Image 1 (tube, rainbow, N blue to C red):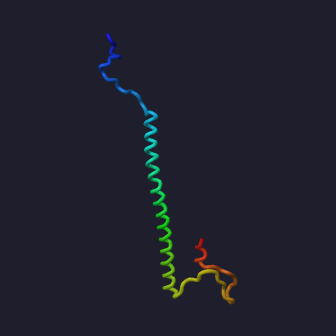
Image 2 (image 1 turned 90 degrees about the vertical axis):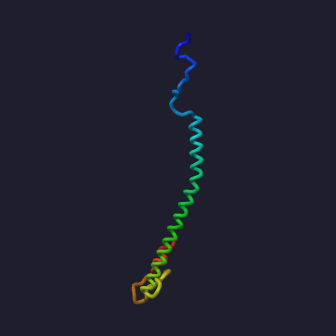
Image 3 (image 1 turned 30 degrees about the horizontal axis):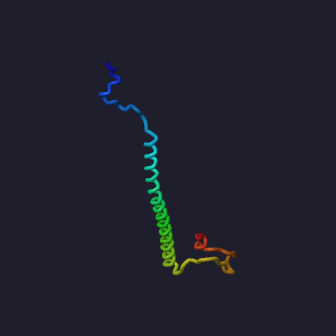
Length: 101
């Protein structure tokens, strides 16, 4: 008589715990592929955000210059300038020079 532990008529339950190396490699390949597809899209979005920020800053400068022109009937001085002889001496520069790179 065959003992019940070695009975071939009943299916054995797989009692292993964890993953095999092949399963881990397949998951890693899938994740790497997804990341390689997503990385250029993230870079493109960041570049677009920087461009939008720059355009917004230029728009704000334009609005500020327009308001200054309407209020004072002139645009602010640009570049380097000197005080008149009657005023304090020295070389100065305007905000336009200060904001340039």
